[in-house]
Length: 532
Image (cartoon, rainbow, N blue to C red; front, side, top):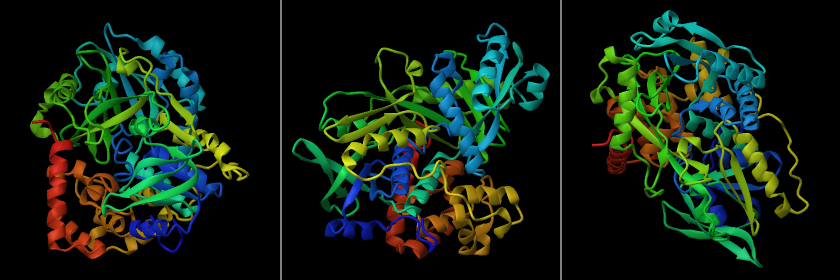
């Protein structure tokens, strides 16, 4: 993102550039999730001429539908994977330092009940190791009474207390966009709704890709010194053009979103589900309360948005009702749901999905670099591995890391924004960097007010529509902002002002608005509400 105000490359202008073929590319990255964005950022900062293309919208497939946690992963210690936990914790602390306002440290309460394993002593030992790996010390034990005071209405039957530690919560889609912002600022190019349909090969080596413009139907070839397949759960599909093996196991995780007033929590509560003893989180996020997640094999078509099944819905609702029986939570209280597909490197399809390791893998086949698996937290390390794997295809070009920082140093402070709410100003800076000031300045006064029940404002919608490559209404409501998940009916209450914003900023007429509205309502009802 440059200082003149450009955020993401205009799609059609970039398409015209690609059609002319007057630019040579060092690297083409396929996939616009957290890993693809991280790779573009690393490539651009090394001076590589890099292009990222995404077949849907940025963060569409997995990176907008995670459990929202940038964490080390306590269970990986229990599985003996100290290295993954150590790397995750170091990256967590790095992100906390570099991106306040988007990465938020939060207290986690792991409830302890009579007859439950692990008990207080083994869990305290686990947390001691966890904190030591992170270089902090903030775990402790809370008594039953303290837990009851902290989480009003919690089921006290058999409750002995809780082990407390800290991890972090984020808006995963905005994290992807923030990385892309820095990548484009460093010279990278990116475009959504551009699908790689096949690989270009010459002399037994991958030398480029064939790209289709999803919106216009055009098609063209782009040659590059290196191609990186960072399509996550879809990785086998492109890789199978040069290697037939199947390595990715798609797993679905689903979540419920409730209004905060119906299930008020200020920290993360970790419980064991009464049916299968799997851990389930209940936590505050963006002014709402989220319950999740499930963990099961996803057998449906990957090109269709994932949806929560009736079984998953009842599973998560049961978890809430068992922990807060006095709240009377029912289906009518749920605002929305979301389901994401995690790309796990499968070891044994008969293994319990929750016991699969979360390590990433990088393969090189005829010059095609494929990367999949891993965790949101370690996206930088995964991106570095992928860029390094592509080095052999880059000839004499340098791929040395130019900076150890994840994000460029900011040049804006909360006091620079037109608001007296310092925490909200930090939030905007965390999400938009040095553009936070322009975001507020370019909006009408009423648009700078928080939308009730959320931390978002309509100024963010206007900015995204103008500057962040919004193509469809669902891009705006489900990924640039989270208003479609946080507001009743997917955001019906703000559709009036949103129509005005979209027409003013993107040139939509009444017919286009109605078409987008119909498309959005269909997507929301089928994939972001509740199963019938």
